Amino acid sequence: MMSVMKFFRLMVAPVTAVAFMLVAWQIAVMMSGVSAYLLPSPWAIAQTMWASSDRLIGGAIQTAMAATIGFVVASVIGILGGSMIAAIPFLRRSLYPLATILQMVPLVAVAPLLVIWLGFGLPTAIAAAAVVAVFPVLAATIDGQVSVDPGLRELFLLHGASGWTRWRKLDLPASIPAIVTGLRIAAGLAVIGAIVGEFVSGYGGNAPLGIVIMTAMREARTDLVFAAIALSAVVGFSLFGAVSCLGWFLVHRWHASSVNSLEQSK
Amino acid sequence: MIRDLPSLEFQSVSRIFSGGARALNDVSFSIPAGGLTAVIGPSGCGKTTLLRMAAGLDRATTGSVKFIGQDGNVHSRASENLSVCFQDARLLPWRNVTDNVALPLELAGVSRDERSARAKQVIEAAGLSSAQARLPAQLSGGMRMRVALARTLVTSPDVLLLDEPCSAVDEFTRIQLDEEIRRVWQVSGATTMLITHSVSEAVWLADQIVVMSMGSIHEIRKVALPRNARDRASSAFLLEVETVMRSLARAAGVLVA
Image (cartoon, rainbow over all chains, first blue to last red; front, side, top):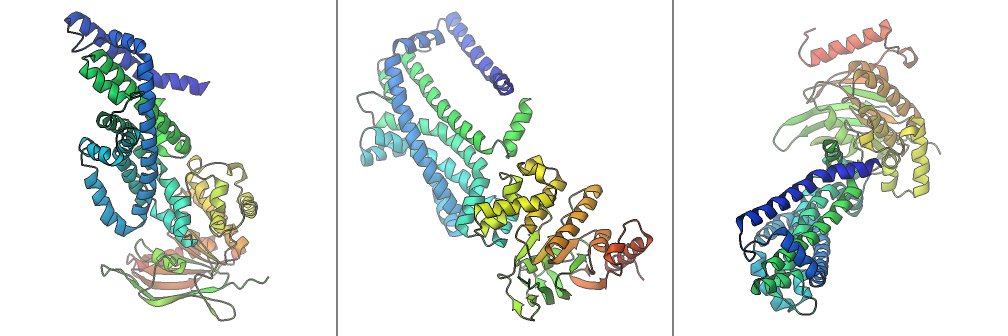
């Protein structure tokens, strides 16, 4: 009962802020008389969402699938790669700077390459999501694992633990809070990556949100563009929420971040 | 099985760090098998470096640290059943008390049932049964140190190295922890080296006190008081504390005798 109350208390501020923004937007559109082509009202967008719900939900499912698979691939590569880079100083010196430089290459520039390699369709959207999401997980994993308390490492050394044992029982659990932070950032980026991938690798059937946005733009359906953007935000927020819940479940009992955020919310 | 408790011998140990700083200079002393020796001295005098060498976490630049069995044979550090309690408790924050105490057994490959049983045993003996399911964040500083001390006991060590286990606690908790250290030493029967800043703690717990200053030994003295006569409020105890205090002050260059 207490946790339900706490949940509602936590939700009051963000829900109020969103409601305030929507009301202000609606009033601004009505008062200014701006054309619906330039800026449709929230009410008009909501009506479009209702009218095109089949198309939008189908697209959202496609995009969510690409983003989620890309995110999982990025998470596995990021955590395993980051752990190896953290454990081997030579890799840290050689691969980490390379990874940092590569993540600065804009995804829109890389996406056409993915189409050349993987063709049109879902694989390219998944790859684009994975490419853009992998670096935050990799960087967070490395950061988390090189920051493990040296005193605890000494304890494991003293008891003759192997590198593998130390990774399983110390490095990985100790770096979970940092990894979760990286995963949260990656969750949002994976949706962006999937949509960019869909822009360049559009395919038929159930068109994903990236294609819905491009098609609606060409048809001058600004309301549909906004509706698709809203749906993509829902997809991103769902993935982010799922990762946040998983992170909370893993660390809330022992890590200061969870303890402090609860204290602040009181 | 009869235990072959080793003595711990520091033979002409010097340690020069890579920057050229000399942490230890020709240090020699011996801790008899089953004895408890306290090493005291001002901060930076090399006490912890000595302990780290005995633990195998640091190496002497010259000289040697040896574990010598009762048959006179030198044991290797790897073969020694050794436990260390550090200044900070070094508990894994995501593990409860039982799992933290059982960690050394887990790393040694002891089965889950056996390690649970042995952890439970030392937790009960330490009076921590009511806290066994708690996480370190839910314990006070003193309780965390008691868990760390219990962890040192779980492997039934032959050599016990205690690096200022009471340095981060208040005076009241320190007295309680001193009792716990004495119990741990008596239960384990281990050859024990205690690093401390507290003269009264050293006098209360040790058979032998090594007073250090600037990387060298200033004085080695046997504690004259029998253990059963060590009442912290007695005049004999206070006199012994004062004597060691004077030695420490001379080592620090504060008092010229």
